[in-house]
Length: 363
Image (cartoon, rainbow, N blue to C red; front, side):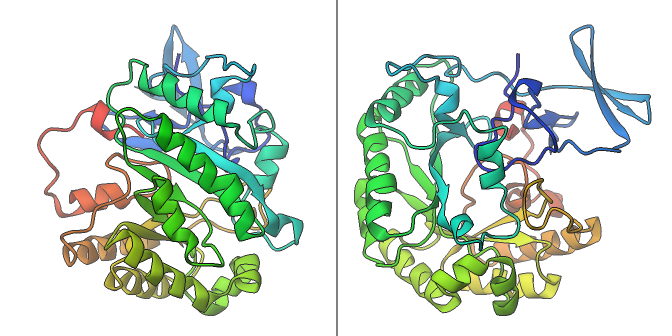
């Protein structure tokens, strides 16, 4: 038994089916958490032998690995017949939430973000996931989570697709966040990663519905690369309006309660560094992801960033975080495709806290 990848947002693994049960992460020794991406021709192989998960490199045994614990609120039937596994999403193995509204109209318009595999995932391995939640599904799922053996919930983390209109945003996203908040006892923080609304005042509605922090990811800082990588965001929303919305959101939620994500590997290192500084100096929290070439995405053949570039950006981010002592990362655990938490903890500087255990560092 283990917590497997459910593919709510991106597909990551080529030719995979849900029944293949590929884990989201693996645990190495020293509390190291690594993401799992299935790739053909990889020299690495995983084998289950005598109830152990063993790692091989070119058929040579390397080590025995650990897996994240199964989720106690999965495998539950909701009153409408759907399964909790197809409703609840988890970001890191201690942060439950939902993928609210799985449609992004940029795919319909033929201008999706180049790295995004949402449409492909939902047509293939994620096709059984519920695309649109009813009030009963949301509230019963919250009850299952809160009554499970999981312990205290640090945060409910939610991700959304992109509605075409603000009315859709109110109906399909904000209403569901409100149901989520109403069902909680006790109340816990609610984070949401979403597309900025056209009318900035909807951000006030997000807060009133129970959202305590919000992510509005530009993905790419350089204006021309933004247009190339995120043509829908550029055409139907706009680069300058995005910055204006981040500023308005910061006034609504407060300093470092609004986050803007950049994806490492989609533009020159120097450009990403410049964007990271600009974001933090505005009182907006920085969140980053490391680009991975997803099957079904426009950039499936793009080379992933080098270790050298990742380390350059990591060291730069480490120095940047020291300049803003009130900043905290969205999550207080290690995540799959980002190093923000590890960097913020001071791992690069060698001042890692003494006591670390699997419960506090699992992803």
